Image (cartoon, rainbow, N blue to C red; front, side, top):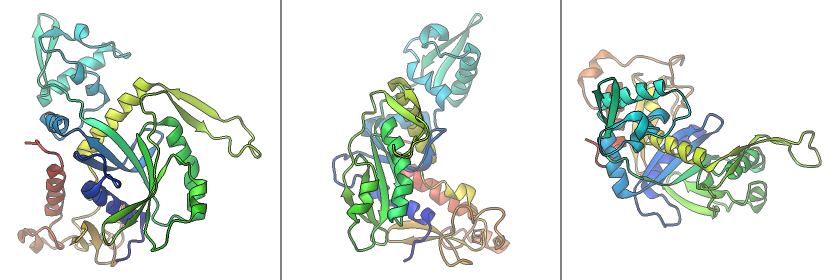
Length: 346
Ligand code: SF4
C-alpha cells in the first residue's frame, strides 16, 4: 500500500503510537495520542501523552471536553470545603471578572460546586483533579527523510530541544528497507530520536534514541535563529520560558489531546461525500477517496473539493458506517474509538 502524503503517514504514526508506544518499552500505562497540537508558536504533528492509569481514569470524571487555560486556573485549586473563590484560588494575574466567568462555566459543566453566600461566590471541588500526565512526547512526521528534508527540519528541532516543553522529541520516517543514512542524522540535533515506521506492517524501529529533555527547568524560546555562525547577520532573539509556564502549557496541551485525539480529521474532511470511505486493514482505519483512489489530504477533502458529490439519500437508511456509508455514522464510529482510549468516560 502506498502512503505518499504526509497526512496519510501521520495517521499511521498515530495509529501505531496508540497501539504500541513506546518503541523501546518502558512506559506500560495508557497513552493518549493526538495530532496537530502545540503552542501558539509551534504545532507538532503527533503528540503522545503517557498517562498514569489511575489518574487518567480520575480525569474522565471531568468529561470528554478539555479544561482550557482559564479552567485550569481554577478547577485543580478548588478547596475541599466551601470558600470564597478569591481566598481559595491563587492570584490569576488577570482580572477576577474572568475568573468568575470561568467559575460559572465550570459550574454549568458540573466540574465545580458553586453557591452564592450573600454577594460572594463560594466554590468547592466536585472531584479531585488528578496528576494524570506523566510524560509528553512530540513527533514530527517526515515520511521521506532525505538530506534536504533533514536540513529543513533541523532548526525547528533545535528550537524544540532548547525549549524543552516535551519530554522527548522524535522524527518519524517511513521505512524504505534500508538503514537511515548516518549523514541524515548529522543534520538533526543529537537529542532528537528517529523512528522508522513500516506503515504496512504497523511496526516501528528506533534508528536513534532521543535524550530526555529537562521539562522542569527553564527553557529558551528561540524567536529568531542567527543561523550558522559564519553566515550570521544577527545575534538571534531569545526569550526565557520559566518552569511554571512550561508546566501550564504542558497541561493545556494534554487537555487538548484528551479532547481531540487524532481521529478528529473527520470533523474537517467530507465524510458526507459519496467518495469518502473509511477503510479498515490490519493497521486500523484510514480515510480513502474512491475518486482519487487514495487517502486524500485534509486540505483536499473539504468544502472546496471540485470532486465532492453528496452521498445519495438512500444511503442514509443503510446504517452501515464503514464502507461509503453515511457521514454521520463515520463520525460516530471514530468518536466511539476515541472514547475507548479514555477509560472511565460515562
Ligand atoms: S471527492 Fe473530494 S470531498 Fe469527496 S472524498 Fe474525495 S477528496 Fe473528499
